[in-house]
Amino acid sequence: MSIPCGSGVVVDLGAPTVIGSLVYYEREYPLGSSEIMMDWVIVQLSPDNISYGPAVFYWGDSDPSNNGSILPTHFPPENYNEVIPFSELYPGAGMSTGVVINVGGTYRYVLISAPSPCYEPAEVDAIQVLP
Image (cartoon, rainbow, N blue to C red; front, side, top):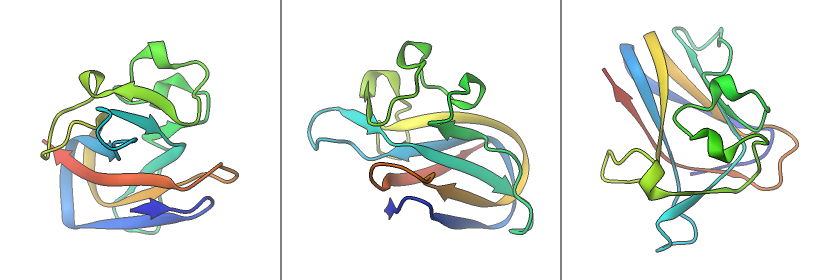
């Protein structure tokens, strides 16, 4: 899924869900390269689809506290299209492109957005909830 700059997509988990960690999967690029080019992207959570808390993941804000499992060798700065090999990413859900985000709470909605301005859409392959 491509998320245009300045917009977002809400994912409804269907019911309040205990989330230990959330895995955000970026698309492999270029195809067959065994790496991703990390887009600027924001992930926020909400129990009610009305009030979203601060970003649990934000690649592109220069704040290392919300970079999930991306290794510190990739920041600062949080470059657009940062090349990250599969060997440094979470291999779940049949993909090897995952960034693990520690959450620790109960939520139903996940908002994934591309900040504005950005250079091109955020490319999202999937999300996965871990207990």
